[in-house]
Length: 340
Image (tube, rainbow, N blue to C red; front, side):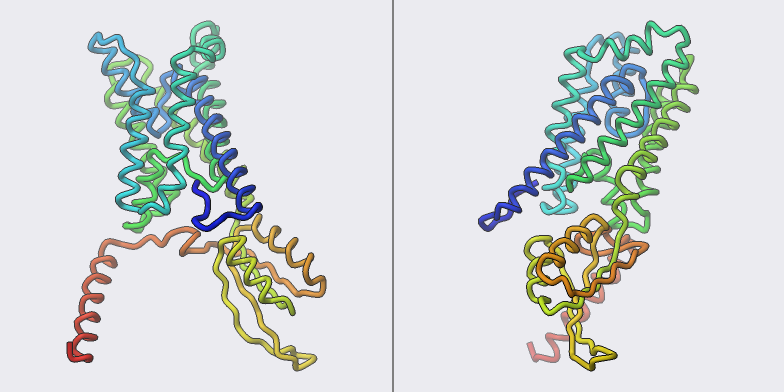
């Protein structure tokens, strides 16, 4: 969540402030759902909170009366951030830095102060049907987690945590993000169930955790993914250079320009083609209508867009090795041709 290196414009400052507020709000909702519903009920739904719950169980089992879930959450956020920084680079990690700090902070405040205990106690301690209360915790906790993550995504950020491992898997293996998320979450839940096998109600706890994780994913799908499908936009306009500059400088997107000939007039035209998410297409449409009301614009829905600024390519390790070897061979060939 960093400002542009050059002197930012008012619009860039506005976008930065808006995105920072959205990421902050998303982390607040996520922390609320975890502290009010999931953690008090001992539900494992994947993510670093579930690792903290499992570690807390082991401490309690050994008679160590010390609360560590928020400490584990903060420690793992920082560790995974630096792993992401080392493997994925600063450009990706900058989007997770703020969330890696603010989410554990919000969670620790809720967790340590007990401000939300009136919610959790009413469902886990004072409810007449304990399993129904636990299920309600999983239901509303999953909605809060999904909503928090979706709002963070809308701000151009990420909640960090195990999501960093998912992105690393997507980058270096054929495993897509959706499947990678399922693998990590369900693995954490399964490990937690195995560790807590002696707990009398561990099977329903584990099943409710799985349901909660599914609800969180469904909420993200509804709030974020469905409203941010990819589109391909083609524009023909006499103000094509202004549109190109706007796409490059204001929207921070790349575009392709190619010549075309009008079928009726025979006039030579230039077509601007750019891949965007749906909400960005509306932003571009508003700009074009303001500078050229006679422009021609086609918006086509795309199943996916891979590459810089979009979904990264899932590259098998074999392909990486092959690219390394071929790259070296090409390098040596160029040296031989140039006599170096």
